[in-house]
Length: 171
Image (cartoon, rainbow, N blue to C red; front, top):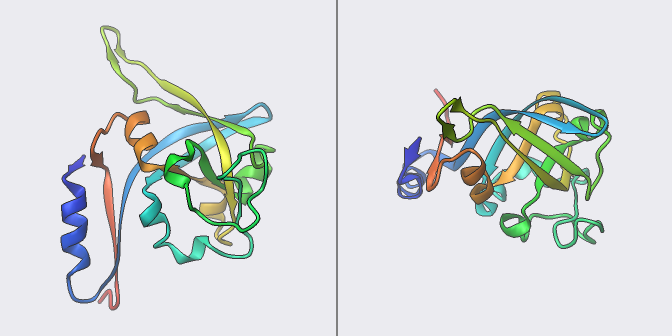
């Protein structure tokens, strides 16, 4: 885990040529609904960092953050951090037959330590957004979760598992 990530993220964003710095809590889970299950990659992300990913906000984005039972008049991420819900790709939504307001169960094999070893962690999350990037790897497999929820779910209080850095010239 990377502790003190916010200060590191701030420092990295000031380096010449760096265009974007985003912190994640990232882990694999089993995602399931009453209609099926599949492996997924959870990316815990802050609302501020979510806004740094311009490809997510497009005409194919649908959100219900204000009220999970009703689609937002204008799709966006305002309130995502406190929503307690998750964003899923269109492919995952289709395969698991989920819509806005549906419940997605996430099961992580890495849970709290017990005398018998690690216990799995399982929790239901409302679907508060469905995105389409046009890249099947993301649309079929990625779940975006609010950072505080991901830190709690994966037992990484105050930490992240990776920092993504985008630069002008990768060479």
